[in-house]
Image (cartoon, rainbow, N blue to C red; front, top):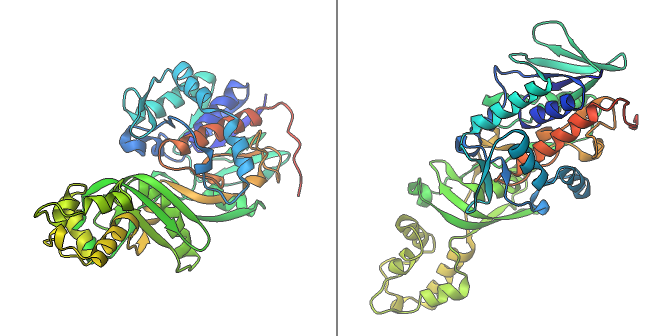
Length: 414
C-alpha cells in the first residue's frame, strides 16, 4: 500500500488527503495547529464562501501559462465540486446572488472544516495535529519529513499543501515555498494578493466606515486590473472586494519600484452622459444636492472638495469647466493610495511555484518523483468569492489522486 504524507490540513491539504485515502493509500495528514483549516474558519466572515456560483477562468492571475491553469481548473468542474460537497460531505450549499457566492446553508465555516476532516477520517485519513514540519527531502526512493519534535516521517509520496504567506496568524509560514525552491523548482516572486490598500489623503481620512459599490481600475506599466463591487473606507485606506481584487497591481508596482501605478474609480453606475443630465439646472438645487442623490453624504462632500467645486453652488451657476472637472472625478477619479496592508491582511499569496513545474493532471513535480504540489503554494489566485477555494479543491483532489497511483507517473529529472 502506498504511504502518502500530506503537509497542511487547510483546504487543499484536506481535499488531497481525502482523495489519496479514498484511492487506497495509507494517508497521514500533518498539521501544525491543533485542528487545521484556520483559513477556512475565517473565510467569508466566518461563513466560508465555499465556491463561486459561476466561474470566469480569465479572472485568475498567474505569471505562468494560462493554458496550464485552465487544465488544472477543468480537472474538477464547478458542478462536480458542488455535487461533492452536497452529496458526499452532506453540506447543503445556498446561493447568495448579490455576491455570486455559495455558502453552507448553516452559514457556519466550521461545518465546512469539520465536514472535510470527518469525511477524511471515514475514508481512513489519520490526522497528526500540533506537528510543526521543519523540512522535507527525497530519501531512498521516497520522502523524509522532518518535524520539530519526534522522529522523521517516511512516505512513498509527499503532498505539499502548506499554503503561502498570507494571514500568518493561521499558521502560514512559507515553509513549503522555501523548501520547494531549494529543491530546484522555478518560482515566481511572491506578493500579498487580495489585500487592503492604504492611503494618507487627509480629505478622505474622515470617511472611515462609508461603503458603496464602485468600479475600480488599477494600472501600472506592467499590468492592469478592473473590478466592480463593494468598497469600504477604513481608518488606514480602503478595503472591500473591489479593492482587494485590484490590489495586486499596486502591490507589485511597489515591489518593482514602478512609480506609474494608479487607481481610478467610478463612484456610481452613472457615466459621463448620465452625470451631464444629473447636473443640469433644476431650480435652486445645489451641486451637493445632486451628488447626494447618488452618493453617501460624507463622500459627496469629499468628492466636491477633491474636484475643487463649491458644494453650495447651484447647478444653474455651475461653470462648464467645473462641471467637466466634477464629472471626471465622479467617473474616472484618481484614488490616492500610499501602500498596502501586506500579508497580515492578504486573503492569498500571489506568485509561487511555476505551474510549468507540475504535471497538470496529477500535480506531480516535474523535478522530483513522488512529490505533489497543490493549493496556494502554486502561482495562481482568483478574485474574492470562492475562486481560491475552487482552486484549492481542484488541485488538492488532483494531487490526492495522483499520489495514490500504484506506479509513479513519468516525470522529467531536470
